[in-house]
Image (tube, rainbow, N blue to C red; front, side):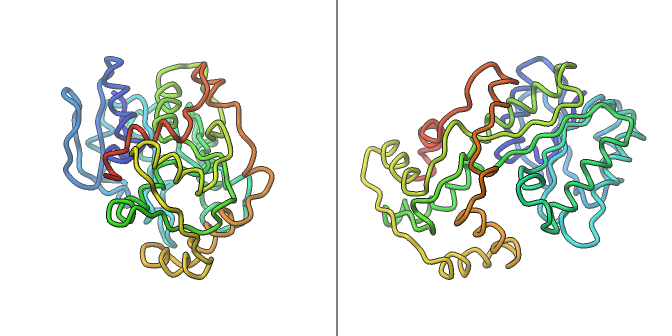
Amino acid sequence: MIVVTGATGNIGRPLTQALAAAGRQVTAVSRHTAAVPNGVRHLAADLAEPAGLKPALAGAKALFLLLSGDLHAAGARPADIIGQAAAGGVRRVVLLSTLGVVTRPFGPTRIAMRALEDRLRESGLEWAILRPGGFASNALWWAESVRAQQVVAAPFGDVGVPIIDPADIAAVAAACLLEDRHAGGVYELTGPEVITPRQQTEAIAGALGSPVRFHELTRDEARTAMTQSMPAELADDTLDILGSPNPAELRVSPDVQRVLGRAPRPFADWAARNVAAFR
C-alpha cells in the first residue's frame, strides 16, 4: 500500500493515477472528500492532526508527503507525520520539499522545510527528497482574466525561470516510490528552459488559437493582488524570486532526465493539456 497526501492537487492527482495504473494499492488522502480512480481508497484527513492519518498508514509501506500551506505556519509540527509513519510501519517516504532550501535558505518556511528534510534523513526510514522550483500550474492564476478579457496580468514580464510541469513532479515521485534505486536521492526539478510570463502568455494563446494580451503589473500592484490569498511575507518572497532570480534559480536541472530517461515537458505542453481552464 502506498499513501499519497495532497491526492487531489496538481501533483497528487496524476501521482495517484500513475500508481494505480502500475497496479499498486493506493490510499489517497485529502482534506475533503473527493473522487479518486477506481480501486483507490480515499481518506479525508487533516495533516495538521497526524493522529488522523493512522487509518491511512495502517499496512502502508510507502508515503508521499506533500504539506499544505498551514503546515508551514508557526506552531505546526509536520515532523510528527514522519514519526507517525515510522510508528505505523511505513518503510519509505518521498518528501516534496522546495528548491528554495538551496537557493534562498534563510526564509522561515525554508528553514522549517530544511529541518523537516533533516528529520526525515534521521528517521531510519528509506527516503527521497524532491525539490521543485516554480510550477507551470501557477499560470492558472491567470485563467479568469484570460477567460473574461483575453489578458494575462503579471509582474516582471521579461524575467523568467525554468518552471516545471506538475505532471513531471508526479512522475518523478512515482519512480521514487516504486524503485529502490532512488533511496537517498535528492532531486532538483525544473522544466527544460527558462520561460518568461510574456512567453507563457504566448503559449497559452497558441493553445487557445486566439490572441491573449500581456499586461505588466508593477511590483506593488502584484503584491496587493497576491496578499489577498497569501501572507504578505510569502508574497514578498515570491516577488523577490520572480523579479530577480539568482543563478541557482535560473539553472536547468538534469534530474528529471536522470530519473525518467526523458526531458521534462515544456510549458507549451502543459498549456495544451490544460487549455480548457482558459476557455
